[in-house]
Amino acid sequence: MRVTFYGAAQTTTGSMHLVEANGKRILLDCGLYQGHRKEAFEKNRNLPVDAASIDYVILSHAHIDHSGNLPQLVRQGFRGRVFARQSTTELCDIMLRDSCFLQKRDLEYVNKKRRRDGKRLFEPLYEESDIDALMQLFTPTHMHEPREIARGLTLEFFNAGHILGSALVQLDVKSDHGRNHRLLFSGDLGQPNQPILRHYEYPAGADILICESTYADKYHPSADDVELRLERYLKYIDRHNSKLLVPAFSVGRTQQIIYYLNRLAARGRVPRGVKLFIDSPLSRKATEIYAKHREVYNDEARAMLAAGMDPLTFPGMAFIGTPEESMALNDAPGPMIIIAASGMCEGGRVLHHLKHCVSDPENIILICGFQAENTLGRRIVEKRNPVKIFGDEVELKARVEVINALSAHADRAGLSDWLREVKDNVRHAFAVHGEPEKVTAMAELMNDLGVKNAVAPAPGQTFKIE
Ligand SMILES: [Zn+2]
Ligand SMILES: [Zn+2]
Image (cartoon, rainbow, N blue to C red; front, side, top):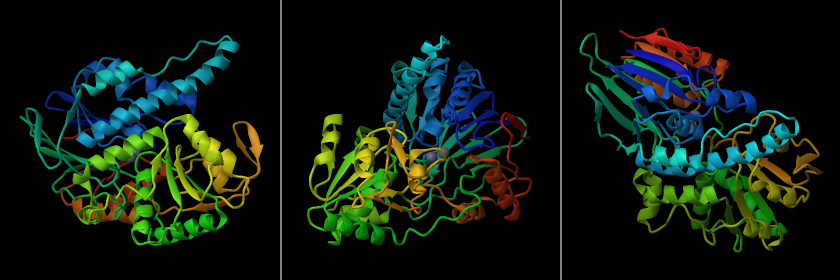
């Protein structure tokens, strides 16, 4: 069999690995490469494989860097099946449509300028109709149920504990000639002990291991004080009758924050009258999908359910629908928490809330996710005054608080813990999903733990495995 690393090789996004075995061509993930606009556009448009030649896609989870180029694959001729968990399928349906919408809005802006300059206009990577066609190809696949997807190729999903629906992919290859193999692909490995989701599992017996490296060289701070800090912020906004604004990713982070707030409320730690608004249509849909799939909850979330408590709600919580309702929050009275997308403050409704909030020292802006360089979120964290919002320079006077403990990825400790348990039979190990220094750190970690010949593959590199 052969494995080729087309995406997330020496970089973090664009997860895509081709497995060729028993005459079948299988993609592990088909993610969107995210980077500078023009380079990203070219990379995503020019698929490294002939789409029509692919038999199956096995999808680890719904994040766009793993699923976001699937509609393009369909547009270019893929007609095979996509194996994913049911919750991943549902999340893909809303996230890909949101991604399509954002791409189009972005292109409108770019093309306006290109038209003025007499340049060729860019076309979107894909249309809604490609997503419709793609959704027909999804084949929901349960965890812990081995499924023979083709002769001698058996797929089984295990829990990855990263976001709702995230899976570790195990593929058994029974060969007519040569040796049998068991491939294990981590997708994105979750941080242990995060709220709502169950801990990742340790599937045994793999001889081929493909593992992510996002935080291979870092340790996350402890999440022990998250509730205590949230409680302090709530008291502060209650005292000042002001706002706590939380820019957050719609899938995963938003639900984590609701969960923490709900736990505080259950213990009577939330001042009366503090309201919670979730201001993003995507967040509303994602929260509904999280609420629907209670079968994946961890023990603590299940115990809450058993006690008659919904872990994903909060007294007086409201979802904001229209842009007008969102704008109306600007002048609404009372202490309130607003959770709005996008997580890095690069677009979406969080922008007008920021514009309205940042100059008042009585408001708090809570940053609780990764902020890439050159984003407004990063400039707020670094308190680089003034900040530019909608083209206007605004003085940043609000309190800025940062919680770094809520990552959805395992850190070096989590990755080491997982590797120790799954490594015993591994003969071929590959570090992916990280910038060069991360994948190098991961390959070294693997070697330190006794996995021989671990490598960080170059983009497009093929490995023949006998
Ligand atoms: Zn992910
Ligand atoms: Zn990822």
